[in-house]
Length: 248
Image 1 (cartoon, rainbow, N blue to C red):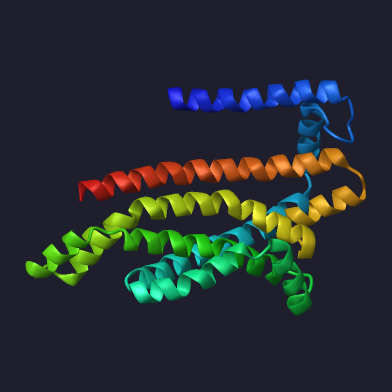
Image 2 (cartoon, rainbow, N blue to C red; image 1 turned 30 degrees about the horizontal axis):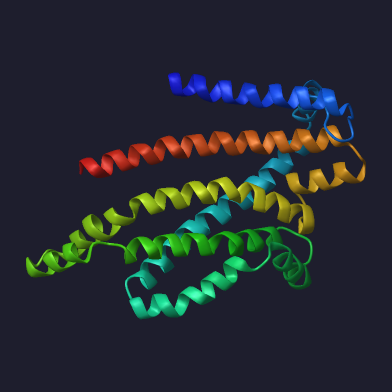
């Protein structure tokens, strides 16, 4: 209960700082006051266009999230089991990780143009390296003595996989999931802004073109709110999964 109260207090502090900053800046074109943005949100949530755009963005987020986690963990697990494969793969993965998002956007626009595919591909390529490396490092740091002991006592491979390998990377998996969830919204919205046909990022682009600053902030607050809700749900579920895993 106290944790929830502290969380709400933190949000109120943000709005308080926003209000003070808006008062001193005194420009609706730079930083509208929170009340005007909240009114804009109230108007926008009544429009079907907003909900259709949210569904478009959400569909991209879901596809990217599941693809990154599934493929990232699978690839990271495989290369983490083999030192040579890990050393060969690591420079290539780091190269992809260091690749600027703006370059991915340019390449994607050349290949697929404006549409649904571009933001998904850009977001996937931007987030995949972290999932791979986190999983691979978790496998690499597994206590080798436990593995050797399991071989000596002829422990079943499935049990070695579950209790030793997976057990050692559970913290990395949870951390990876939280990082990906925290960043997937931002990457998808930015990609939509640049090469999307529909979605919240496209609405922000239209609001910018019409110099509707309140709408830019309103759409941003909506995405942040959804992201925070999802992140909190995943955080609680992750803690419960970790607790149940330790009890098994």
